View 1 (cartoon, rainbow, N blue to C red):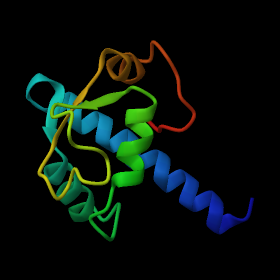
View 2 (view 1 turned 30 degrees about the vertical axis):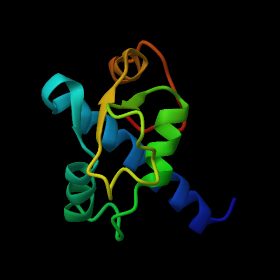
View 3 (view 1 turned 180 degrees about the vertical axis):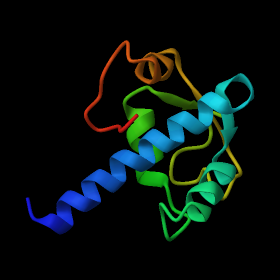
View 4 (view 1 turned 90 degrees about the vertical axis):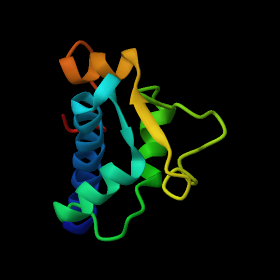
Length: 104
């Protein structure tokens, strides 16, 4: 793996961890996707407000879920969707389980 690809992989892990930590701070372990996206842009962790691949990863791993079942990772920002931590997501944050793809 070259340095550029390694940096991108680490960036992806960091963004996923940031999303989970942000949810843990929110009411009922939840937050608007737009709020998290705006914070990531402000922290200069991402350049464009598209976190769909990160949200998709976390949803596939069952760490998060959408409160509206008609929304998915690719329509969440546009629809101002709310995501929340699942029990498995809480376990990951608390260190009960591990995922090398998420930098907690």
